[in-house]
Image 1: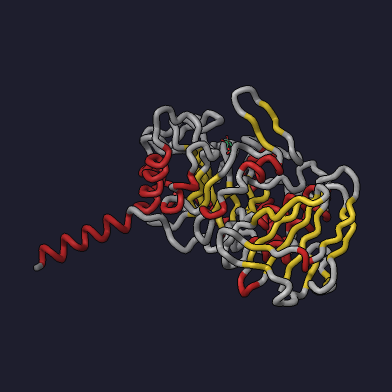
Image 2: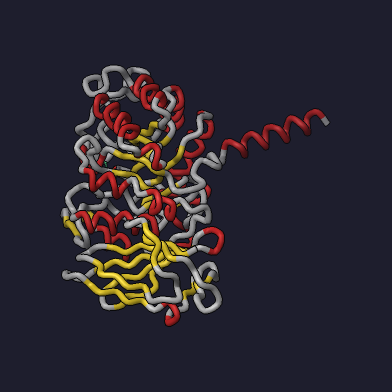
Length: 399
Ligand code: GAL
């Protein structure tokens, strides 16, 4: 009997180890990542400044939580014991102290590494060191790990990410595990039990709808990524999110394009990870990033990825079912000139093929609220009318 009990306990603990940390991302994670703006040019003062800005600019209050250092935080070599070392010039106080600083602001701290032998920028990868690296992160009080896919010759993606998941579980400190293999191995088909979010594409670029060709790979504008992955909706949900990449809001598109980008990431229930320099961000950028009504759509408890309804007059129309029978609707003007929207609710019966939820204005009259202008509009008995600027957005909530 005793042996049976011991065997059962061993079985149970082995099984516990082989699970991701549950409950860490009931809604899409929100935060900031260094890569889009700084690439490997990062240092400890930058992290402290960003943490300060989170508080000062109301980003923390709006729900942003994670500050994540991407590639380039390490020294080029592991130490004599095989441990990763923070670059002593960029991070003289070390990662544990930096994590403590970030935590002192009520925020969380994340790092980046890679399943391969080296990271994409040529720093030591975790291949063969997974458990050791996970223990180190736990000892530094790290809360989030972005795990990349460069230099992974012959590795099986699901297996490699599972190994790191298990290593994190064994190390014991709850960590949001962010899978970054660019969608190559369709992580939306296997990532749910492994990570809390997975990138669905190659790198984003700060453009509306471009492809930046880098020879062996491309980076993608906002609409390229949206269109590439609008059909993997069923994979997303509480604690496992399709990640449409770090945002380019504030990185050079027009203010209208930034608004549309932010609206769409919210409609798609993507993690909202800022990628701009918060120290020099304009008021307009911060206004977009801290728009709590739009964020509310992203953070809706049902966690449903929105879907494309139609395109009328080159206005993209998207819908997202929200909790308690509410809906979000987004109209993006793809034209190169302002567009007049006149949307007759009674002529549109919108049904979500995935969840069966329907927006039926014949049966119910909804209150309509404009989420960027923060005002009540006429209810769904009237047509929705607006002039939408070039690449700008009208986003409404129906309750
Ligand atoms: C890419 C990844 C980027 C960034 C970069 C760092 O593979 O998609 O988001 O992490 O590596 O080298």
